Length: 258
Image 1 (tube, rainbow, N blue to C red):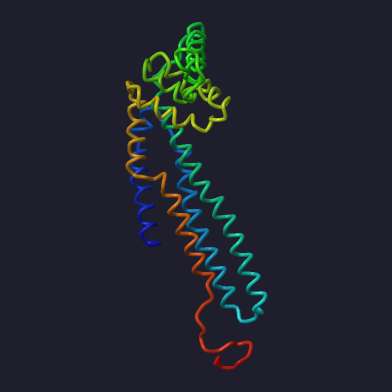
Image 2: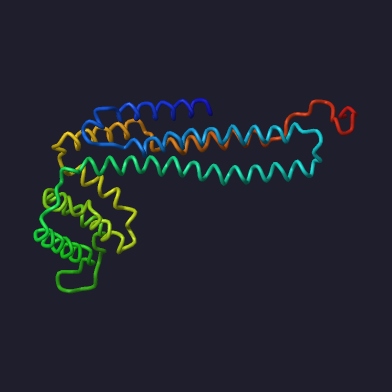
C-alpha cells in the first residue's frame, strides 16, 4: 500500500507539474515559487519518515540501552515525529493551496474592476442585495419567518450568475472577502472565486492558460495527495516503532531466551 500511494503521489505531481510549463509563464502566469515550495515540502515529508524510522531502528538495535530507557526514547521519538509530520503535511497543503490561489487569480484576471465612481455604485448594489436576500423569508401577510434567508456567499453567487461582467470582479476581490469575513466566512472566499471563474469566460491568454492549469490540477487529484503522503509517513514510522522479533540472544545477559 505504501508503494502504491507513493507512486500515485509522484504521478500526480508529475502530471500537474507538466501543466505548469513554459506556455503558462509565457502567458504571464508565474507560480514557480509556490510550486517549488510544494515540491520541496513533499520531499521533506517523505524524508522525514525515513529519517525518523532509521533513528527508531537504531534505538531498537542498541544493546546497551536499558528497556525502560528504550521505551522512553521510542516514545519521545514517536511524539517528535508526530509534531514534525503534521507541520510537514500542512506545508505541502498550504503550498498547493497557494498555487491554486495564484492560478485562480490569473484565471479571472480579465475581469477588470470598474472605475472608482462606478465601483461605489456596484458595491452599494451588492450590499443592498445581500441585506435583502439574507433576511429570513416571511409569510406574505407578515407572519413569523418560516425559513432562513440565503448565506452571504449564496447571495453573492446569485449576483455573479445574474451579471458576471458587472459583479464578478468586485465579489472576487478583497471587498468580497471582507463581506464574507464580516459573517465569519472569510475562509469561503477561495471557493467563491472558483465559482466566479466558472460563471465567467476566460478571454485573454493569461486567463485561458491559468484555467487549463486549474483543470489539470483537478484531473491530477494532487490536492488529495498530502493525506496519502501523511498516511505513508505514519505507517513507516509506526512499523519501525514495533519491537523487532527476538533473535534468540540478549547481549546484556548472554543467555538464550527460553
